[in-house]
Image 1 (spheres, one colour):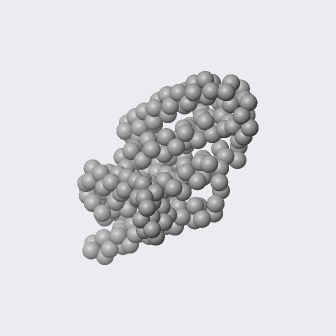
Image 2 (cartoon, rainbow, N blue to C red):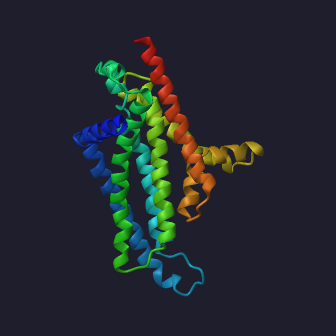
Image 3 (cartoon, rainbow, N blue to C red):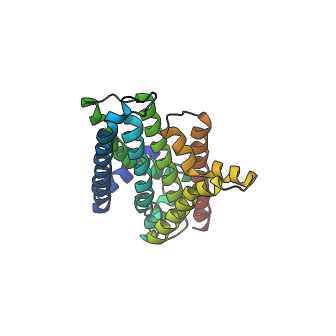
Length: 252
């Protein structure tokens, strides 16, 4: 299928890009430092936790904060991975070739999306190796760990969908990156508005916050409403991307 052909091409181009390798290296370095810091904190308080009933374990103290920090760090770098998806095609005049090829707008959008998601999933797998290394001396709550990883993948899918849509709106990758970051940051800090005493508006802000649903999964609470939220979120922005490319195609 053309979707997988486009996805493979996008993934290959990412791995051939020095920027992507730089992002991969910097993210792993930052998270490795945060992971070692959390392990050190756990070692310092471990003796005090032994006598406490229901005390948090290594998954709560080490793994959940690392996955949370991974979400924050990737919020900063995801726009740089998605900014070229369509805008670069438009700027280099290759988007017209895609329009003339026997491929639908849906296949282009899904191919681009799956391509960048392939790279992000590789990044998540590398991040997961850090908590898994704790198996040598500790016991992980695999349910909580799995829910946290699922939350991180869904969060990144949301980042990628927004970035892809913003990339369809402009010919300048830099503008796509900055606007994507602005939207992601707004959706992230909506959680603060959700915590304020604003009546029904607070509940709405809390539900719209992309962070609130991630935190729920990090706590090991698997609620289908959180998963549905992310799936709807991704679907909306992919549909908007398809509609945008359809409008572009009609102008050619």
